[in-house]
Length: 453
View 1: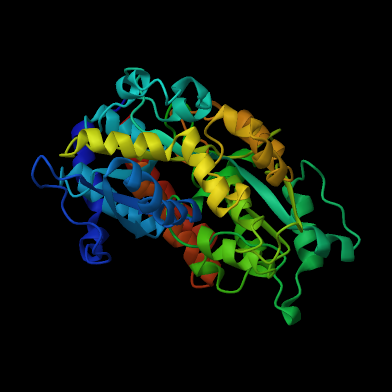
View 2 (view 1 turned 90 degrees about the horizontal axis):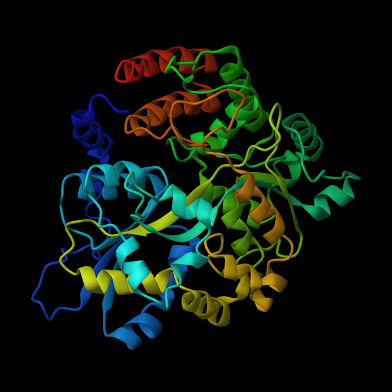
């Protein structure tokens, strides 16, 4: 579909520019070279709780079993995207394995930047690749039908709410709320004097930060980035209505410092009892239900992603382990990937850190583990239902030209989405307007559309 595939390197190099100044963030990211007898691999991963957990557990479990040492580099989401893109696209060879997502994998597979993992997973009988959830595998599959990354955990999005706050206010959350209802709840529950926000929403710039939740709002409001024939619709009435709603909601009833808040900041805010609601990734629930990490454990309710014109609006995502073609330790890298995404690893997490912390949403068998079912009973059904009803082919009210719920599955979207998010962020901060953001965004989208017309 892409008429100018050669343009990809320039686009990705531009997206990765910021990573050049970040290369000193961690000493763990040393080059993966060495003699044939060197059983050390380097891993780059996003700084989410599940990744912090595997860093804690690897030495005492994986390394003891295999003799393979893993040197980890952990970065915030936006920095991770820049860093891994720079390394993989430029064939830098700095990392043997890296966490990437459903957006990057099909594009990078098409460009020959990743090892395919279907052959290895099929040959590894203990791995049980048939147990992997099909929506996750499909999101990580290339045009050749092979899997190019293994899902570490999978997620959709849903609405989390503080049951105590709702009960105290005499409010009841529907199983499938509308955004209009959510706005009313936020208005009633926002209490600046007590330091409680009505809702927490991402305001941090980035196509995978602010625009992950916002694009799902655009979808359910009837908007889209592009119509089926690649007509850009960024300044359409529906896109504008959704963005106005989101910006006004977070400005009026959102968390303090919303313009600097991403997933991690909202996880901390809601987990500390400083927000009545939070719309974000289903994978957050495991941390929220861990009393060692959350003040609201046992007090959280979970509802489907809010809607307007569609029946469902949750996104579909997986953070997955990929192996760049440049790795010099292919066998050791696969051993780590297979362990990190295995049934055995889930047992290690459950027994060492608590069952709610199991990286779920990737295997059918996870939902048959008695201990996990008990610990996840508040959110497991809504999580699975959200994943199963996410529709990357048709997430809105009109046909789409590319796959993706919270993104458009083309190389240019990383740059497009990030630039528009920066302008929407300025509107949240009060230094610009939604009209300006979307007028400028339409021009950028028109430039992208020329590649496909």
